[in-house]
Length: 306
Ligand code: NAD
Image 1 (tube, rainbow, N blue to C red):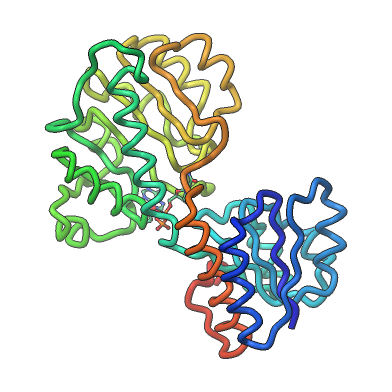
Image 2 (spheres, protein in one colour; image 1 turned 180 degrees about the horizontal axis):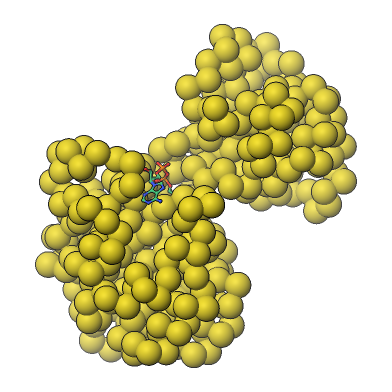
């Protein structure tokens, strides 16, 4: 069995070593396609692969057509909107992610960005504190839970809304569960976004939702840029001089945000929520273990195209 690691942005060496150890211990062969610059290289590399580990790499119908021997794709990470799930299902290919492996890394970044923003991007002027502020966690999944844990350490009052997670589960963590996204945004001065990008959530963070946030509002996005209605966010920030937008996923209109909202807008230069040595190693090794479990024992625990 041949397992291909296809990463435009490669894993750290220590993560590749860990993946190799898992794959070779199972008696499989590991192939690497790192830092590829052209889709043709990917199409060529997948030809004889039985399994593929990817990061943000795009696996679409063309890649699946080229991968005649493919049984499984594992996205080392949480969001799998870079894989065409319908096409994978049509090709009889199992798709998995590695939930939870990078959540602490993303949560630490979210809180770090909040501190950076309330301290005026460390520009030497007097800022505010997070302690006592109401934090709304929009989606209480793996990252949201870690954000709650860290935010409580800062002394924030933590609220959450999740469309699918039962309120009792949220409240067991000492977090106040709310009934709707609208209620969350009305209640909380700081909202941290953790919804996945789906047909339902794309463009859902819009003017109507954000306009009722309390004075001094801040939206922190470590989820996906697609969930933001950028045109409406720009309009809102034009109408509300107190509103800050801090993101780990650069908007398409980055230049416009930066020019219009200096001092209340920040984007990382490229998505770095999961860019830690620990998250890299955890997600890479989990991906390798899930492939071994699937190919040897048929384990589909983390399958996302059910
Ligand atoms: P997760 O799957 O553990 O949690 C997602 C949560 O969203 C679930 O609890 C689910 O019930 C909830 N949800 C789904 N649709 C919803 C909706 N319409 N309204 C409210 N809640 C909804 O995922 P996670 O590990 O917490 O990651 C969350 C997202 O963060 C990922 O989908 C990914 O897009 C993004 N992410 C970004 C980085 C980064 O580098 N910045 C890294 C990891 C994840």
